[in-house]
Every structure is written in structure tokens, then in C-alpha cells.
Amino acid sequence: MNAMPGKDVIVACDFSGRKEVLDFLDLFHEEKPFVKIGMELFYAEGPDIVRTIKARGHRIFLDLKLHDIPNTVRKALAVLSSLDVDMCNVHASGAIAMMAEGLRGLTRADGTRPLLIAVTQLTSTSEECMRSELLIDRPLEEVVMHYAANARRAGLDGVVCSPLEAGRVHEVCGGDFLTVTPGVRFAGGEKGDQARVATPAKARELGSDFIVVGRPVTQAEDPVAAYRRCVAEFLG
Ligand code: C5P
Image 1 (cartoon, rainbow, N blue to C red):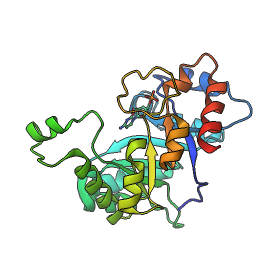
Image 2 (cartoon, rainbow, N blue to C red):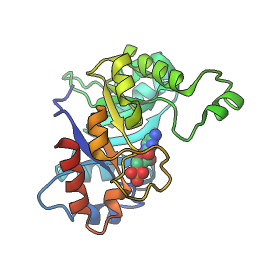
Image 3 (cartoon, rainbow, N blue to C red):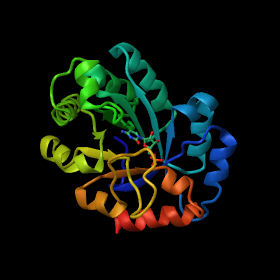
Image 4 (cartoon, rainbow, N blue to C red):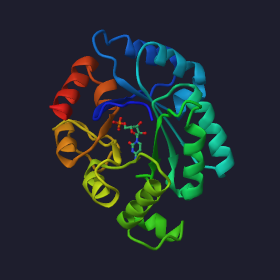
């Protein structure tokens, strides 16, 4: 695996195009934030936006949430690995064989690879939806922890979860299993569409390894100051 310093703040760059994201990153003169690129930006701009941001010295979490048959996921992750991203992800609901094959595809000839983490249950899926639409008749937390344990068994490095679940994931999967946690807001800030939120300081206290912060930084009046506040609160 690539050497990866422990905890960090990842900025979710949920912009629709190249100009918007590069204008945003141009605001940073001293720091090189760890950047999350999601589906919208990747599908709009293609792999070139990953190469451009990487060439500027940022680490990249490519958040494409792959979910397909094992062979397809392995080949797709081999392509993403060649883009030199630092972290990418798959859906744990693709099951252990898919996650394990994905990991194989991600591993480069020299044995290095980006971190691979799993999405357990999307936070948009409620327990009621699981029961009535997906016919999953177990408590949500039990499903999340079981999927996290599956990801660990497949050899993955961690999961995406709420900061409020980070401690339990570490109990079930071990302290070295990474928790990458969105749903972070400053004290007194707008929650927006996030329901279960924690401040960067609280996420730190709860044991998150990486916090993913979008709008509190990207939409801030002074994004650099907001980013610095996140880093100061989270890393201490
Ligand atoms: O703007 P905000 O801080 O809410 O952004 C959080 C980021 O984390 C977004 O890119 C969102 O898609 C992502 N995310 C999330 N909840 C999940 C998984 C990913 O908010 N369960």
C-alpha cells in the first residue's frame, strides 16, 4: 500500500466542472488539501481532471462507489489505480468476492496500491426502506457493522461511515481499520441535508481517521480559513 499519513481532512470538491474546481483549489497557496472527486465531476471531465489535480500535488479520493460483478470491478479499479489516486471505494453490498477482486485490480505491479474503502449502507437508505424495498429485515446498525466486517475480511482498508459510528466500527473491525466520515459541520453551522452530524473536534474524539468536508469549506466566505479551522479542530 502507499505510505499514507494517518488522520486528515478530505475536502469534497462537489463542483460541476473543471474551471470551478480549479478556481477553488487556486485559493490555496500554502496547503495542498486532500481532495475528494465524486461522480459528477469525474463524469463531466473524465480522467484528465484527476491527472490535473494530482499534478498540482493534491492527494485524491476518487469517490465512484463501484458495484458490479467481480471481474468488471477488478478491471475498472486497475484503470483507476493507474491514475495514481490515493483512495477509492466500492459498495460492500457487492459482497466479499467483488471487494477482494477489486483490491486485486487496484494493486499495481510494484505492490503499491491506493487505499480501498467500502460504502456500507448509503445514508439515504432508511431502516424502513431496507425492510420494505430491499427485504433486509435486520436493524440498520447491525447491517452496517456486518458489511464493515465483510470489507475487512475482503482485505479492504476501511469504510465510509458516520462519525457517530466510527467507534463501533473500530470495535468490530479493529483500530487500524479506517473510518472515513462525512457529515461534518462546524458548531452552529448549517446542517443542510445532513441529518446526523458531528463537528471536526467531535469526529476526532469519536475516532474518525479521515473527515470528509464539503459545503462547510467550499461554500464558506473564506474557504481557506474554513479549511484551516477544520484541520485545527480535527488534528489538534
Ligand atoms: O457538503 P457536505 O459536507 O455535506 O459533503 C459531504 C460529502 O460526502 C459529499 O460529497 C457527499 O456526497 C459525501 N457523502 C455523504 N454521506 C455518505 C457518503 C458520502 O455525505 N454516506
